[in-house]
Amino acid sequence: MRKIPVDFTGVRVTALLELYLRWLDSRDRHPILGDEWAQRAIDLLDFDFDQFKPLGLGRFAVGVRSRMMDDWIRAFLGRTPGAVVLDIGCGFDSRVRRIDPGDGHHWYDVDFPDVVEIAGRLYSPRPGHTAVGASVTEPGWLDSVPRDRPAIVVADGLLNFLPEHDVRRILTQIVEHFPSGEVCFNITSPVVRKQREKRPVPLFTKFGIAEQWFPDDPRAVEGFHRRLRLAEVGSPGDASLLRRSPLYYRLLVALIGLVPAWRNAGWILRYRF
Image (cartoon, rainbow, N blue to C red; front, side, top):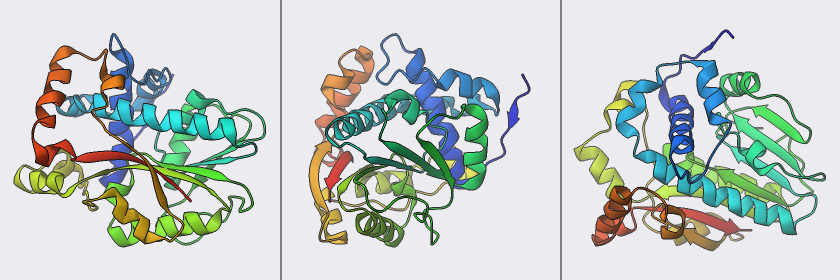
């Protein structure tokens, strides 16, 4: 089969990086996420994924984050008939296939038009799924999504690459578009920004990837809109999800946890509205 050429720069490259890390997780003896569709996507894309090898440890954090968000979505759909799922900045994620939502739910994947076009060639169409080619920082990106249904919105690995004013606007648009729901995303704290300034990630420099939002407290997001309320805080070092991961990584997480500044360097968050 002829491979699909990919020539991304900037934040679009994170779609490839996250795919690579999910693929690495799927190859582990005891995967955290176990994304069985990642191998097919890797095989179909004409891209040098080997250049991501220095970031391979990230598969554990990505596995934990994605698994946690998958579980939150399943729980929400289980108690909310007729709900909408909105996955913004979805990249090449197979999440809708992992979750496999039942009848009555509708799933919207949103990303740049060129990312959505390639994703459409990686995965076959399925009922109850709509791909929206749009930038979430531009007006009108929510226009095709119904306003009269409860929703769970997922921004997995997206918001830290946007400036705070865009994050605030996007969350406000979401809360005011739907009658009720939840929104889930991950963030990193200012301690990570300081580390990046001292020791930039070479691949981020190479591709022009810039992290921009580093909030110091998950509660601060509640100030973005009066309806937003923090419901759950998860950690990339979640012991229950890492219990079968390699010993060396569990020891690394334990050591990081001994340093107060790094103990809360990142969060996986769920808000209600």
